Image (tube, rainbow, N blue to C red; front, side):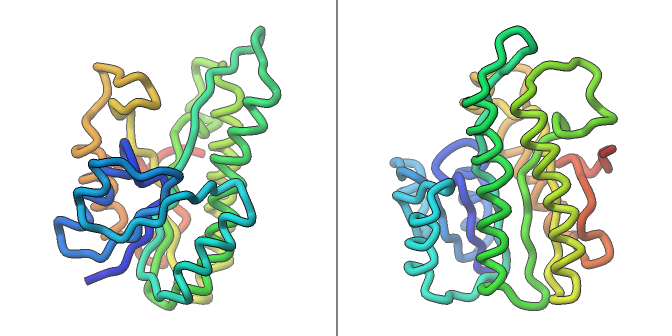
Length: 221
């Protein structure tokens, strides 16, 4: 049984991660700002009231964990604002950097003290952070923040390899969640997380730092 910490755990992909990990017998620590009935019903350890952009909240989380050993960390929390060239919202862009890039990097850095050789970190990114794959433009804040997360993940993979900690950089696909207004063209959270967990389970130090789609495709930078 592995012990896995999941951020953004109360809904969407994060909630589904918690559901599937718990169902296969892993011990789940679900981190969120506010827990809901679905998360409560899973019987996992819930650490609510944690705002990941707040340094004092991160300190509170670490205090609650009390040096608990972790086998894996899924840094899933994220936000999306649509920012086009002619309606740029600098504060919204800055917020996306804080939530999507800086918060997971800060937490990954701090949680390395809870990880040991053979453990792993999985970052929930997006192919919208790929420069080579950008054919439609727009979405400046989201694209920029996810590109920043991607390069952070690559550096983490290099820096943590001597410690035996692997890093997965994962695109969940277009998933029908609240973040994208339950887009009917999206896949289900269940299907996405099944693929994401396959990528995590196959992760090694040799493949650490790679950028994958949930379906197993390697994605361009």
